Image (cartoon, rainbow, N blue to C red; front, side, top):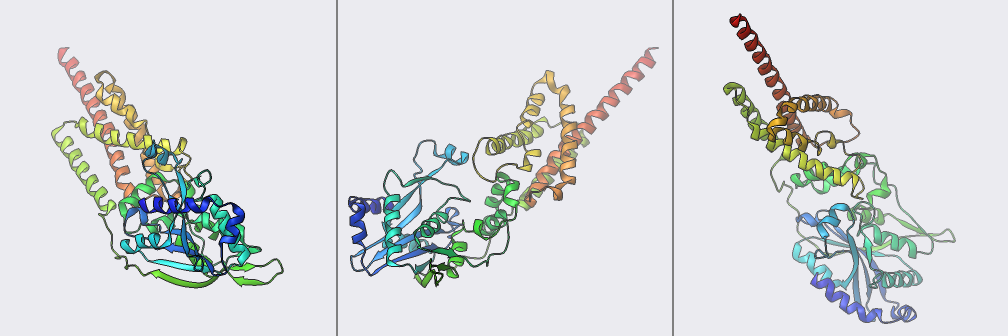
Length: 408
């Protein structure tokens, strides 16, 4: 962040020039490039990054325009991020400083020098200059549709005299598949994202929506052409350079396997349930803990679906087994006078969870394989409670009947 602040301070001086002066500021030696930064091993760097570079060798300036800057210290940042109201800004920094950050991180950077005319470069420079002014540089970030990769593409498309034609080379896929690929070494992160994002990200998408990922944009740019107004065409990319080599990413998971952990958790609950039956006891604390966690998680899903503006969160069919109503069961179990109603809740929940598991493959949403053990855990606890309470009720009735017979 300090580097971006330094770059912004430098750019303030340039911003003091009026628009007409800026058109003279560019020399014949200026180059405009798309910088694509390879994904890193840190969680925040898993999707890579994109920036625009304007380098004027003759006049001695070299700036990277970066649409991926945000202020973590902004008031209510976590709440606004969860709600989908995060504001990012266009930061400007000297390219050497920008590249140094990725050099230290070990992430490679690919530079695609764009085959733009002098007039197109001037228009892009002026657009970026205006966009980077304090009153213009902030924008509402959207992970899938308006981010550090989509913004540079739009800026380039607006500045060309003709039209950019992209090769149709990316096969149809889904947002979830792309996200899974980026997070493939971080399985718990994938677990969390699969929980938060619902059916919309499982719809098939063509090439254009996939360009929210920097490496997809770089791939398509490599074969794109600019069609001039007179019908002639030229390659969008003139030359490809590699200013930062980077280190190869280790092809191995960085964390434990959620599916294995969830099945182990299920096994523990199953053993405790067997102990309950054997000792004819009821571990109320177990159901309170399980359904409290499920209810609180359901509150988060409800917020993401009905309050947040994130794309892809509604509908989320995980809401069938994780919902705030589970908190009502917690109250039924904790308040002695209400416990008699818990059997009805457990009965309804067991039916719902059973139908959910039967229709697992038929929902228009791909569920993480690690979800099945928790669903099965809640089902077993609900079904077991109903069966045990039904059995106890029958025993009490039989005991009462026998007692009346003896009394007679």
